[in-house]
View 1 (cartoon, rainbow, N blue to C red):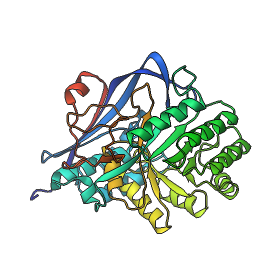
View 2 (tube, rainbow, N blue to C red):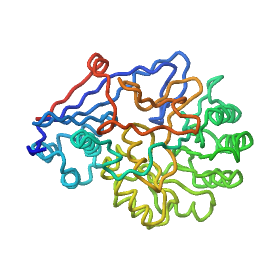
View 3 (cartoon, one colour):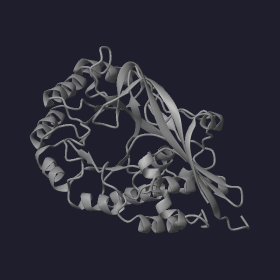
View 4 (cartoon, rainbow, N blue to C red):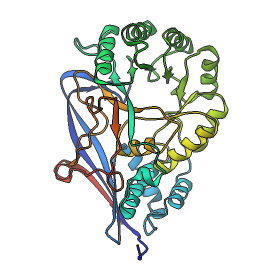
Length: 390
């Protein structure tokens, strides 16, 4: 490209996407199955425009993240969009302790733009390691609806269904405000049905009230040889001391850091011996640039990083990392639609329960940038809020 591009405008859209048979759990952002209910789900898409016609796009994130854009937009507008490292560091400096919100979404859109500039998929720009990614099924929160994920046996049945579809792993998000005995019974029921046939994971979603209950859950994971467990109790998943103690008392590998933000905090958690697997989240940890830094830091410690949830950008990052095991297909349920990102693509990209191939894998999009085309007719028709920065 002969002309040096400049960022001229950043646009954010909120749009609605109804989800049938889905309700909200009052104490969680994770949904529950609720027959007959319609969740008025809202999501966001960001576009970065340049003076040479290149446009970077990213769908994902939350309102709290996008609300921070006015804080640092002056560090983005007028910049060369290909200077991602400089923009990453400057926006990080401006945000300071504001949870580094929205810099992640800006960064991912810049990577999409770069791929379009160089006519290459993002995972190749990152180095490239694989083109197919193994998946585990990650469930909705357990519910109390007949025919839903309402019992240990229902979870075991769904695990069997996922195994037959080809999934290599199965992870539960169990009840909020339930006795630990329900969690333990579910672990045993799932292991009895599919143990030894697929990797099993347990995410208590910070739902257990005490360290003691977390220990009991961890010991049940030990009994059934779970692959990992995560976010056991109500510290919010952020206490390095507490999780180091759990690691000393429970043999099952612990996966933490979903609620710890950024490179430095992740490394501090690792050095504190507070986790076995490292969690990374593109929306919270500085986008693709930030998560790649965390992944390489984890690699230096000999640890694996597991990325949180779904989307084209997640696939591209996993495709460029050696030290990672799975793509988290979630959130899934036997009677409710996939929850997290809406299916508003005009291309053949999809995230859903049956999106895997016979080997339990999903492909990496091969087009330029993130390699997907969004359905802008649907987005424009269902836009509920818009902000433009220029």
